[in-house]
Structure formats: structure tokens, C-alpha cells
Image (cartoon, rainbow, N blue to C red; front, side, top):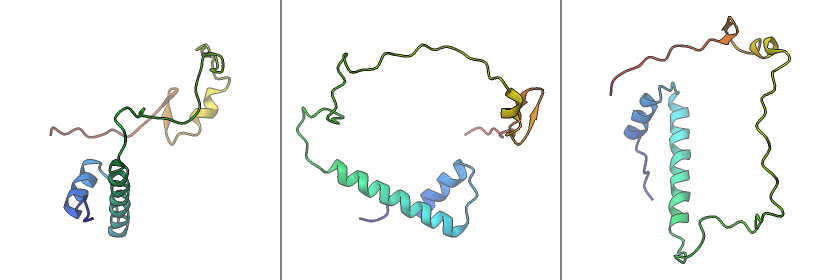
Length: 105
């Protein structure tokens, strides 16, 4: 199998994702992505009957063994400042995030 993600395509993806990668990192990640594509292609080549369920894991989730859906109840955090203190920057009770530049494609 030849690489499906060429260096040029990978560089384009890196620019779209606004990543900063060293050349060695870029080569490693591109190689790993190509390995994953190879594995996907190998799995896709396995012949399956048309009536095979999409996901079969061997555990039937019947109503008698399925846990009840939990109630969605909001509970206030007792110490929100403790959580905010873990953020790199916060102001007036809000976490500050860097502005993302927007460009038209």
C-alpha cells in the first residue's frame, strides 16, 4: 500500500488545523494516520453477509437488565472558584480563552 496521505495533503491539513509541528512530529503523525487508514482498509475488505448487524457485541440489552435512565438534576458546585483557579485565565467568574482568528474559505 502506498501512503494515502501524502506529505502535501498532510501539510494542508496541518495548516487548516493551525498546528505547529516539528518535521519529525509531522512525519510520525502522518505515518500513524496512514497506518490507521491501512487498518480501516483491511477491515473494510473483510467479506460480511449483508444481514450482519452493524455492531454485535454479544450482550443483549433487554429491558430487564438495562439500567433506568437517571434523572437530569442540576446540582450547584459548592466551590466554583476552586474550579476557576485551574484555568490559565479567568475574569468575573468566566474562563477566558484566546480569540480564534476567523478567515473566509
